[in-house]
Amino acid sequence: MKTFQKFTVLVSMLCLLSAIPAMAQINNMLTFQAPFAFYAGNAKLPAGSYTVTQPDDNADLLMIESADGVHSVFVEYVADGSDTGSARTEVTFNKYANAEFLGRISVQGQNSMQVLASKVEQNAAKTAAAEKHSLSARSQSNDAATR
Image (cartoon, rainbow, N blue to C red; front, top):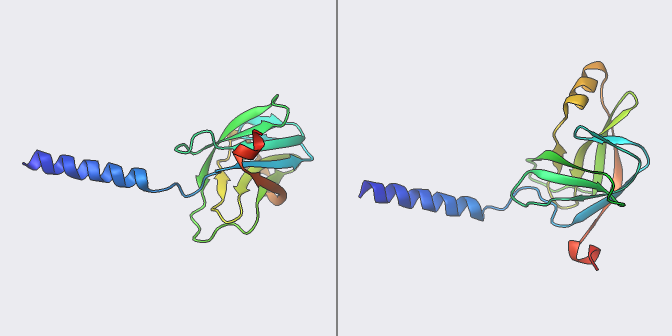
């Protein structure tokens, strides 16, 4: 009988955890224009138009891809634990000397996603303080993007 109770509790917990929505997700495609080269994770991307998508709703991964599809990278993120959603849809960069690093992605009305710092950014942070600045971004439905 004790085994059955343990099993029931375990199954109940799994059902409960699978029903809890993720705190931060990009349900739509987010687009932005970067007028400068920047690092996303360990990859250096050239200036240009980019899209941000979340290929797997259950993973804390985002895909950053150039509009022409030539450049793409996956980055890990952690959700901002704030009780209030973001006021604007934007991407925030951390600038150390002459190097720009993707730092945060915010979608209006949702929690922000803090991009985990790469080794390159961690090393840059040892030599200079970050200057944060943001660029406006647009959120659009994946359905509309494929039409």
